[in-house]
Length: 157
Image (tube, rainbow, N blue to C red; front, side, top):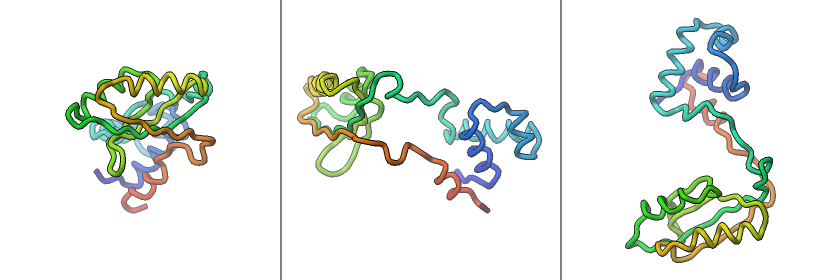
């Protein structure tokens, strides 16, 4: 999917002010309300916009430890079975299959170092996971972001 300058401006405004309405968005962008709605519908239908919900900060709700865990899995179980196991653990925020020494990379959170041990034990307690290697994040230097990509991807910007 290609983005144009209006898509980029729309996505930037929604990122900066997620509670803004369609009418106010159209006023700020200087386009018709129908144009904004059509663009939003297109971006949602194509999967460019994945949701309109709040972005929750885990540390603020008591999960101050962030870790990245590389998992080696038993190939006979496969990635889907491991993903099903990981989906049942609320502290696993995301998981990706990867290349290199490991098979799956997870971002997890915990309330404390002791709680982190509990979460890791829960993760590796599944027969399909052979080994885990954990790295604790000390500070977030660049939060998850996509707007620089949006600006780069926009045609005619």
